[in-house]
Every structure is written in structure tokens, then in C-alpha cells.
Image (cartoon, rainbow, N blue to C red):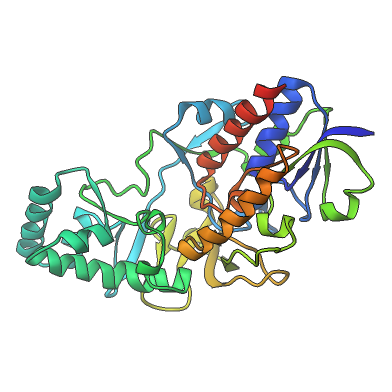
Length: 375
């Protein structure tokens, strides 16, 4: 059997492009996935207690894009869900991102009011200020606040998560953790926020439910690439692996997940509680908040950041800095030499930290510009 496309990986980018080329162009697709499931890191499944769990950590869907929302809505119904996160600071649980309510939870009322007024005067209401920008521009009492947030919310959490100081990371990463001058305790403010009603895996199954799409699990594409006939390749796996590390490894941070089920209805007040300063874990997420299920038991997932070691654990977060960008550029020059015979898209292939909606936007863009536009 001959395929139009050999797609490496079965995560968001792979599923979106496979669905598009099958349904829109009538082309044949073979997806090859080394894991035993589809869905990439968004994969979810029911555990032995009947609770829907996210195997690779919490994935909360949110987007500003109506295009992404409408596209995915073809394959799932949605359960509205607004994610809330608390951080444990000095023994108190306060809203994260740090906002005006966090001020009043931590500081005496009069001092909190003074800090609130200073933030409003300097930045305005409803503004998200990256913590490093706040530190650079602050003076007087705001310098105290900026340093407090940096030390207690940001520094130790970042060092646990990334293994480096915030200043050593790309601002695209550090800008993801702002100070939010608002009383909105939601973790995201996007207009579309919800969870797939039956889970992410079921959504991916529907995306791939087309007679032109075949899926091969538990398989490294290199084992079959010389045995299968195909016209073009889409790689959604690590770009450095594809080129056999010819310019060296692109580094990542990895995670270890520990699941625990308790004989109680709920364990914590919100979906996720961050531990920036204490313990080896970065956060605990309670799965039932995400699924909306009711059960006398509850399942937690604890996250332990760790170094990425190829072959030992999974790559999660690209470490974006100048040195790694230069190495990535060398690989991108190799991509150009392939003249479109191999396309690259996705978090690992692009070496970029994508939220789920951005992965969809990227995949739709590749389909529209580099596939459909040339058909």
C-alpha cells in the first residue's frame, strides 16, 4: 500500500494535519507513533477508579482563536471549565498568577491597599506585567513587592522547573508568569475555556476516524521507513533526533509524574496548587476538577521536574536561550535542503513551547500554506 504521507508522531500537530489531508484532499496517511497511544502529551485515560487522568500532567484547554475553537468543536463537545491555581507562600494559599487578591492575602490591609494603588498608578487595571519587567521598572515600595514576588513566587519555582535562573531563560518563557493587576482569580482569561467532554483521547480518535488514515503504535518510524512507500514526510518528533544529532542535542527539561488516589471526595480547593518554595514538587493537580466527575475517591498528580536524558525519560520543555537557538538554526538550514519533501511541525519539531491552541494554529497553517496551497 502506498501513502501520500508518513507522519511521525500522533500528538496535536500530527492529528490535525492527518485529519486535514484525509478529509480535505482525500490523501492517504500513515501515522507512526512510538508510544502505545495517540494524543501525544495530551493523552488521557480512565484509571482503575474510573477517574479520567492526564498521563503527562494537566492539559487545560483555552484559546483566543475562534478558528481553533470551531475546528476542534467538530470532534468534541465541551464542558465549560475555568482553571484556578493557588500558590503556597509563607504557609498561605494565594491566587496564581499573583494578583490584587494575592496582595491582600499576604500583607496587612493598609499596606496591601498602598501597593494596589501604586500598581494601578504605574500600570493600570487589567494589565499583565512580566515579573522581570516589574523588577526593572519598579521603585520605592514597588521594588519591595517586585523583589518579594520574584523571590517567593518566581525564582525558586523557575529554578525547580527549569534548573536555571529566570535571567538565563528566553523572555518568551519568563513572560508566561506575569503579575496580573486584577481581581480575576482565573488562571487564564481567554474567551474560550473548556475541557473536552469525553476527554482529549476521544477527541483525537474522532479526528483520525477516516478510512484514509492508518495508525501504527509502538513503532519507531526508522524501523519501517524503508518498507513503506510514501510521497512526503511530516515530522512532529524532535528535529535533532530526525537529523541524528548531527549538530548535537537540543536540551529539554523533563518531568516525573506521581499519581495517588485518596479515599476522600476532594483534596484541595482548586484544580492546581503550586509549591514554589517547599518540597521537590512544583505542583499538585486534582484530576476531578478537570474532568468534572463526582466520585468518593480523588486522584492527584504530583510533578517533579528533572533533567531530560534521551532514552530515559520524555522531553517536555524546550530550554530556549541564545545558544540553543543557534543550534536550532543549524537544523533549520538542513530542513531547507530537503525542499519540502519533509515538513516539520509541533513542539518537538519546531523546538518551541506551544500551548495546545498554538499547536493547532501551527498545524492548520502548515496544512493551508505548505500542503493544500501546493496541491
